[in-house]
Structures are given as structure tokens and as C-alpha cells.
Figure 1 (cartoon, rainbow, N blue to C red):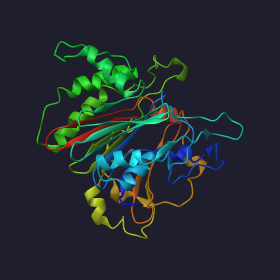
Figure 2 (cartoon, one colour; figure 1 turned 60 degrees about the horizontal axis):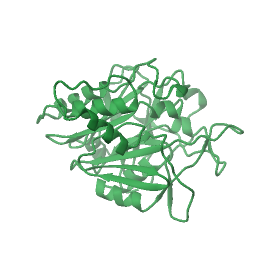
Figure 3 (spheres, rainbow, N blue to C red; figure 1 turned 45 degrees about the vertical axis):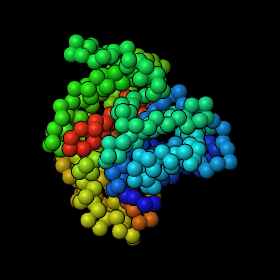
Figure 4 (cartoon, rainbow, N blue to C red; figure 1 turned 135 degrees about the vertical axis):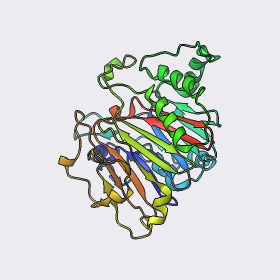
Length: 352
């Protein structure tokens, strides 16, 4: 591990399941990372993509999709490094078995990355082959269909003008168009907090309200937006907000770096953001976390999606982990990633 990072995760849920390949439970400390930023200024985001085709296992080195975000944030400092790192491995598909005898679950995923320079890339796996879309122009990602089809659909609404009427439903393709449209009109600013607020306002246009039906995937039911993250890549601040808590919390990577919490031998720490009094910088509120998985009574049901924020410290680096328990598909669907390369620096925003 080269870099510490702030990471959102589904490991509270995932660690109660097993891999159908190995029969062993998924690792609470290593599996389930889906979103975050590291101390070098690289951001990574994992989203659900049903169209994914991982392909058969091969002889090359593999990293499971449950660990890809951590792999990139632990080892890469830039988008260019992330592109090379992804090309060096095969993304493996460890089928998730929620309980003995249950049908294995496979979650298709794609990954977006961006860094403090404004560079960005998207990784998708089609027919077992890695597809890399690398360039500063890749600024929006939702779920299905794959990125080339999403971009082709956006062209139907261009050129964007003030008379353009973007689609208003919660289908993934519609949310992609809305984000692309509104990013086109974000005012430039030199104020970091103003830009963060602008990105938060755009996020709201793609949020799926509680109870909203998923018309594009009716068989999957209703999967609303449960939480929002915002990342300021210049200031290296990771913001996070839960739909049930009116307050946003954040972690300042600069403060973390001088706090001593990344030093070798430092204990693993956690924060439970279900406390509605939490607001602002929460680094000082972290408490030691036992190395074992939290007891089941602290985990969440799909009908009551509480959360836990924890910080495991593998080797000499640290990760803050936002753990969302409940169904993994619920967590992934409704997600999007968008970043704007504006002044004073790039930002990213994500809904889940």
C-alpha cells in the first residue's frame, strides 16, 4: 500500500457473504470499496453496470471487482498510473453467495477515475476485454447502457441550448443526459466552497427520490439515492451526506496527513455517522475499531439503511471507509459520477 485514502464501502454487507469460488467470507478490511480519494489526489468510483461481461478466468494476475477501487487508490497517484494498473491485471468476478445454498450473485461494474490535474478515465469490461476511455472529456458516468451508448444518446440532445429539455425520469440514460446538460452550464469560480456547492446542486438533479419506481428495470424494484459524496481534488477534502441526516460530514486529507493517524502501527479507527449531531470535519470523532467484523446488530437491513464509517490502516497507510449495509444492488443503482474541470481545480460528485 503506497497511499492512504478516504473510501466508501459496502463491506458491512459484503463481509456477511461468501465467494462461491472459494467458499470463504469476503474480507471486511479489503473487499467492498466503491468510492474515494487518496492522499495523492486520485479519485476512483465503482458503479453498477449490468451489461458487464467479465469473461473466464485466465493465467494473468487478477483483482476482483470487490477490490478494484482499493487496488487503484492504494497503488496509483494519477489517472495515467491507474490506466496502466488496470491494463496490467484482469478484473475477476467472485460470485457473491449471501447464504449457504443461495443462488450466487454477480454484480457487473464499471470504474471511473480522475485526478487533481483534471484528467479522467472510465474502465468497462465487455466480452471479457477491458475497454479504456481516457481523456478530460469523460466527466459523467451513470449505470447502463455502457459508456459509448450513453454518449451516443446524449448526441440526440445536442447542441445544448437554454431551450433544450433534458429527460426528467430516473432511468440511467436520462440521468446521464441531465448531468451532461447541467455540467455545461456550471459557472466558473475561484472559490472552492462555491464550486463544491455547484456540484452538490447538480447531484440533486440526478437523485432518485425515496419510493421512486425504477421504470427502466422494473424487475429490480425501487432503489433510491441513499448517500452523496463530493470530492474537492485541489483541497483534498472528501464530503459525504446521508439522505437521513441533514448534515454533511467531511474528512480533510491534509489534516489526516499531519495527524499521525497514517503512521505505522496506528490503530484502526471508525466513525458511525448515524449520529445526527455529526456535522463538519469528523476526523477527531474517529474511535478504535476491532479487527473483527462488527456484530450483526450493528449492521443494516435493506429497509433501514444505516451506515458506518471506519478507517482500517493496512500496513503503513490508512483508508477511511464509509460502509453502507443493505443490498448491494440498492447501493449501486441510482449512482452517478460527474466531475467538472473548472477553477480553482477539478471536483467530483457522486450519488448512491
